[in-house]
Length: 283
Image 1: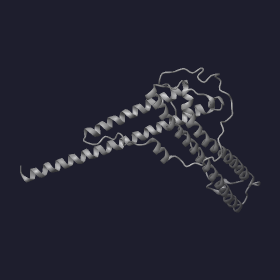
Image 2: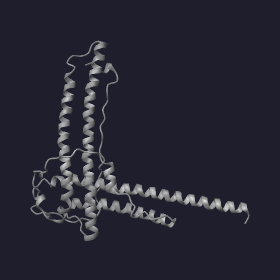
Image 3: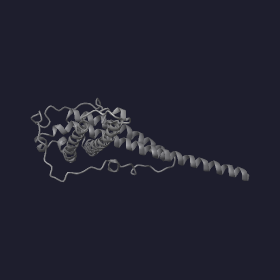
Image 4: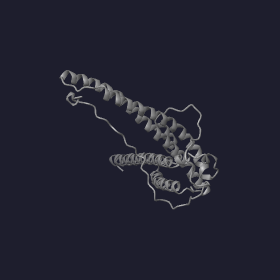
């Protein structure tokens, strides 16, 4: 083999190795994205399930029951409720402050502006008052996001407990609605995990190392991306409210097949429009 042929062979091998390495890198990046998708699915599961079970927990019987489903639900639910109740109280105060600010702005212009100078004066005053309202609305948005974050943490924790109970004990929730919510989420997670396993096998086939055991941590991602919230330093007492309709813990519950339920946890955000023209302020 000539020197030129050797150079060509070496260059081809180097190019093939670089292409293989790039493909392995892309597969690993895809796996990370899929693992994040699993975490997001578990978060959505938490938002939907919390909204379903939280009203049921308003009964004192919920804290005295000893069935398997309640034992699994109760610890993460109490933690989430403690934080969410503190944030809900703060949200009420912020809404009251916003209503007062809006009322003050309405009362700040008892007479209609007639001259250009009065219009500019009202423009500056209205902008200042709107700034205060904007700050309160921003704080309200953060509180709502924090509440949703605690529901998502609840979902990640509870999903792990339910999945472990199903895999190791063959247990499935006896509450029909809880079962539907869990089954749909578990099916979605299983489908995503199958994609991850397929990509991991491709990595091994290309000569790379398996990513199993080095995966993306759902709990770690939740801690890294959740909004920092204020905690309630007071003691938590089970909320009082309407009693559960069933006389026993599992009364009226029946198993249902997987599927048949979907959830959409995506929230919505609201904006506002500031004044841009003094002529708009003919107050």
